[in-house]
Image (cartoon, rainbow, N blue to C red; front, side):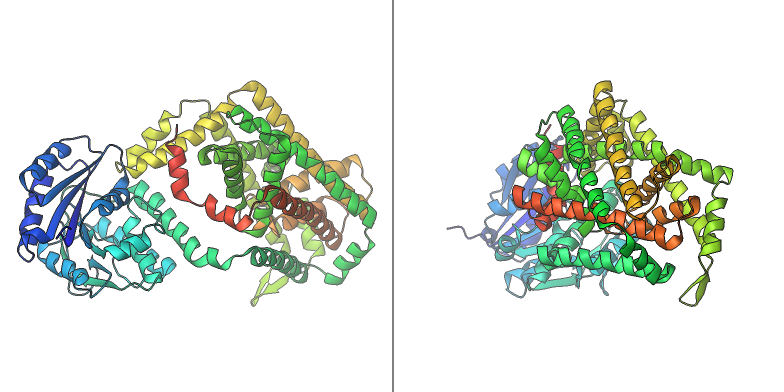
Length: 614
């Protein structure tokens, strides 16, 4: 049985300049307060490409208290620590950065805090009163902002989560190991946050710290990597446990009802809207639902063509069900989280890697934007540029009285002009985005790697660049194939024609005569309404679609404002009802839990792993 009580792990990646001195100082410091046989120093050499492995091997051969653990692959800091901790002999597991930025006189306090049983985890802090830390301005701002976000979103009581000077009891590591998902720079933050949530004893104490070497704030790691991990952990700890299928469906229903009620009460005559709805032909309203149902097999066919071009053949009905589920998720959850649900479903049921799943969604969105832009974006921008929106503004100002909200009076004409300009901006942005993706997808994706690594030299950049490159490459695969481009484009136009036909049946249900002028206006209203839904401000675009649709119909036809709003509501409700029913049937058929799918689709570790499979 080993007498080793304390294992100090030194995570090392290309540290040939510093590793020998760090090991020597570490051994000397530990020997000053521990018996020689009570500790070990483990160099966790993480796929180095310099002389670090040779130096570590030589040091281990010359001192039995030193060990060298080698990994052929880059594990990341968190992954390297977990790898070493599993193989370490001690019950007190310590690590600190090889640059020894933290004054080593604190090492005894760090070790003894855990070894004595005083706490389960101990960590140095550069932000507690009594410390001395000399930071460059950019590092101080980044560190302060990061720790503030962690305390705000993850409800941590600690001041400094990223100080590379920590000790853990083996029991704490074993309890937290399976729960902690990050394998890179967020690993120790997640350990500390989850430890606090589980009631483990965490001690933070001030240390003297001075930066060493040329370490700098890293844009990709700090902004994309750490930020996304904060959001992922916040979701898992604070949101996901409260979301059950019943709660999510109820919340979605309440949001739908609340949005419609607020819109009706604030803007229009509630009685007139309900009168218009009560006079609508229920048979034609039901028929509009059947018409809209015809668009779903078209969606499945289009998605099959996209995935087939990416090398993942699938059957139309399965993919139609996956789309039903994802669109239902978009109705229930904000910020279009349902899009990730589809990526999860095709990964779990058909083995499509996450980057390819998200790329297929991007291709689909590109063609949706193309179709919408062809139908409405150009017309809307032209109306704003030529002053053609004045007709709409004048109609709104003449029919809708000023609205007072919170003591401030809003002029409806001015609000309409602003809304149209915003919609035009979204339309213009859609045109630019589509053009950028179409043009960019025809070139070698290596430029992505060059761009990302130009702003970051951190290993996390490799994961980000790899995922983006595969993503853009998959888009390129479809867009660069003329036959696939034609099929998917024609399918997109057909889907939107059926969407508009659904609205026309609803117009007929309200007694409106379907004329060529109304058909043209319906294409415009439905397209602008869906352009408004590009902004992920509400689940399913509730309120955004109705507002844009009503504005166009009321401004360009003799239809009154309450009736126009009633038509927009019924049109959207019919489409959402078909979506929800189809989603529920598909979830039962494919045995998919919506909330589980949302959780799994947000797993950044899965995305990163998928990015490295090719």
